[in-house]
Length: 129
Image (cartoon, rainbow, N blue to C red; front, top):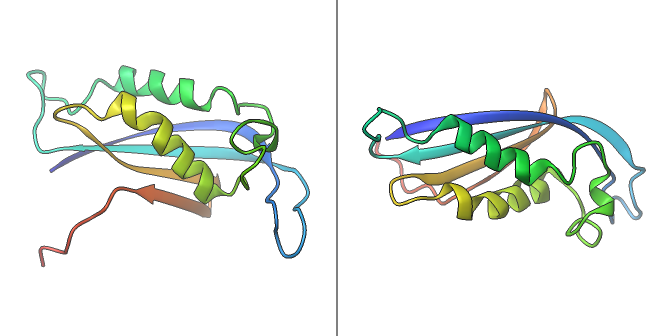
C-alpha cells in the first residue's frame, strides 16, 4: 500500500464550548494539518496523486479559517471547535475532492501545536501480524 501525506500550516483561533462547565477563552494556535491518502497502485507517472492537486484542495478547505476564529465560522459557530471536530470537518470537506477510483483519503491530523494532535481516520482493518 502506498501512502502520501501533505502538510499545511495556518494560524487560527478557537475556544472549546462546554469545556469544564463553561466556554474556553478564545486563543490562537499555529495549526498544522496533515492529509494522508492511500492507494494500492500508482499512476503512469508513479504517483498516488498529484501533490499540487492535493495542495489546492487543502488550501480551499482551510481558507475560511485562516487568520480567523473557528468559533465564528460554520459549523463551529454551533459545534465545539476541538481538534477532533476540526479533523473530522476537514476530512468530510476533502473526501469528495481527494477520494478517486484509485486513491483514498485515509487520515486527517489536526495539530494545535507541536505536541497536541487529534486524528480522524477511515476504518483500519485487523492487523496482518
